[in-house]
Length: 246
Image (cartoon, rainbow, N blue to C red; front, side, top):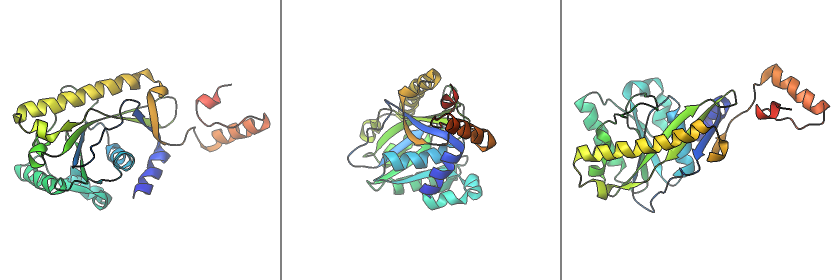
């Protein structure tokens, strides 16, 4: 399935970029919780690609809205499990499944902690309280914020941007009241998002490293003519927007 999502991403997006400062500092051992904002449908694909690149030694899992999982059943084959966070029973099922997942030191749980699609500029983030409960289930876990954003730069396809924030140890958080714990998780993610947004706004590719690159250019007849023109003038054909400049 990973090869499928790589192909799908490169066909529809221009690049997945990680901020130069945003690589994750992962633990040597212990389960991992990655929690993020939830700006778009593409988050699921970004999770899959990021898990393969940055947590390759871990089995990765992610909760997904139960109704959505019925529509995209393929995700159940790659670690997604359905939850209904709008009911007490659904919240209890989420915590039960999370406890089982985090019982292994080589598992990672990826959570869109807002529980709904939200603009990256929305403040407060409004994280669901369940994310603050996870350290009670696995105090030996490392919990890491992940900022996700999308934007159009120079190419036809959009750019996906990510940045991991500073990791926190479950044992350091579990002694705090749940309200204070949730506030810390939210403020840490918001700070990571703000820093990432500043880099995205700069439109400076040197502030990022490419994790996965898609197809540049427009394609079709237009790029075909450009390719012929480049060959006739002895130039190397570059399909990107920058390559179109004389």
